[in-house]
Amino acid sequence: MLEAYSLAAGGSSIRAKTAKVIRVRVPLDLHAVAATGCGAFSLVTPLRVDSVIKLAVRQVLGARAPADKITRSINATLSAFRAGEFTVDLNGRIFADPAQTIACAGEMDVRFFLRVPTRGVSSEILRTRH
Image (cartoon, rainbow, N blue to C red; front, side):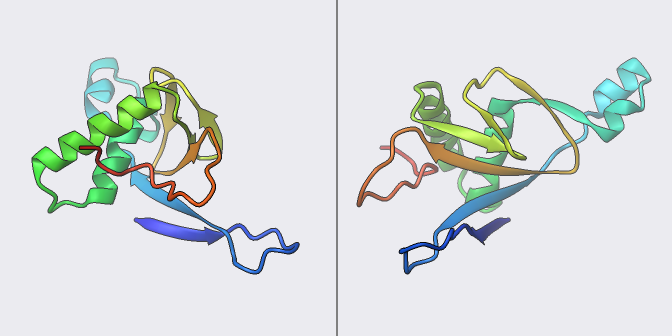
């Protein structure tokens, strides 16, 4: 689900500033529950940041997107993330390393932020590069 939140801080700006939020459902790791016998894994799932990014890209593209487009979009987004073109905000925490692990439960709010501000250029991160 893609939602827009107004981030207008007032001041001289006439237009409201919006940030897109991608809400991703976190899958349960049933194997970890069965293998360890620990019920905590049924409440919280540890995921790497790159796995959350993959889930977000799939969420944005939708269930009817062709498999090759999903693969291209995921690869382009992850390569841009590894190159340091943007950071990812996951439930209010900023991540720049795809190998970091985060404890996830239920749903995650995912936001992408460019490292270098651009002027007059669309800053859509989840686009497919050809």
